[in-house]
Length: 490
Picture 1: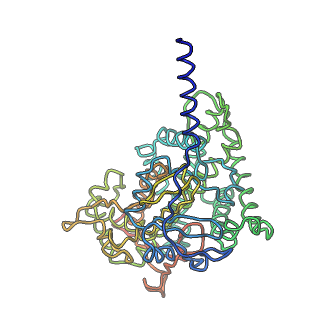
Picture 2: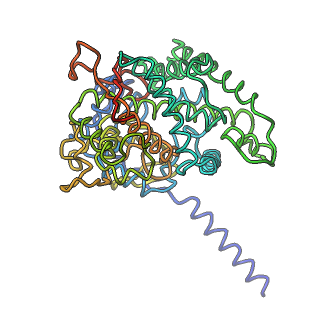
Picture 3: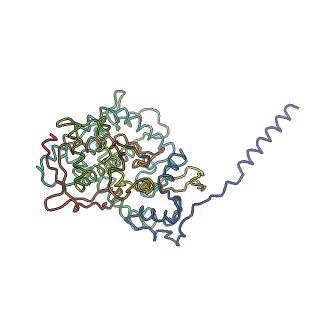
């Protein structure tokens, strides 16, 4: 009798399991959006050079959560602080994946950190976070490295004696800090390998922002037929060759202290690694991601900061008055000085808000996901439009203007704003945020202590160009500035 009851119970459990497995899934409920045309979808509604602005205009008609067809790809767009933050922070792992972007699938094959998903991404990210913390990011050791690099950058600017210098030169210092953390060594600014690597990174970033690459991502078969991906793949292979040479130059991994991110990756690969997370191919992929992201974003932001100081001399006056009053001549800034420098801190935050350096990076639903009252099926590409948060009219008094007052209260104290999301939020928040914040503050404050940044002779502040150059990020256009030494700052 007991055996019969157990058998019936087992049969009941099996039937319940099968019934649940066959239960129909809830039908997707898509947000509203413009009607797509055959083949092109809604591409006719998007300006090639200002897609994010076009999407923000569509949001005024269809709401903060809407559907747009990018060619044949059905994509959900999130705009405004409330919708973007709710999605990034409130969905956990369900919106932590990346969609398979064709060009990055070719470049990385699902490896690396920034365009990978699932267990591979989680393992690579956790390892990177632990390693950067161990190397002193967010603490005194890295701050000291940044200040050493500041002195090297000042020495380079001194050679111009106040004459015009190329704006891109300011990117050398943050790039060298990244290389120091990745490879355990800094480069002399005139080192051919340093200049070659920076040139290759620049070429890749420009190529990734071209209309041809956008067309390739939308129509990969047509793009492959037209060979639109070939130029960037060639440049990527040149970057990989340099990275492999730098990795090979490091001493063999052992059990001693780790001096660089590359050393940590190789050391981890010496142990049990059944999933190949620390294989040579994935090591190179992770280093490639860190090189590209770690150099481009901070370098471009520092260039923008200098350009905007030349464009707004009154703001620069107030920053330098505060630096002179609080720090005095000869005293280098430290990370802990940010509280005592509220206006300087506000200006640097406003630079990052105003430039919207990386307008959006796509996400992908890892399962059925509810967003804004809609139900999206697994694998839906989602665009959280960060530029729409940084320019949200409900969050900022003058979103289209460069206004440091956005981060100051009536008494001149610094105010952290919840809608300040240049590093994104949630599970995919930029893993280099702490490093970038330290670098930007120390380099920006140190430069303005020592130099007056102004347009070249014959050009007024309004003559400095601030329309972003075409690239993967919203980088400043190439031009020159003058760094005139300030005796009080020395």
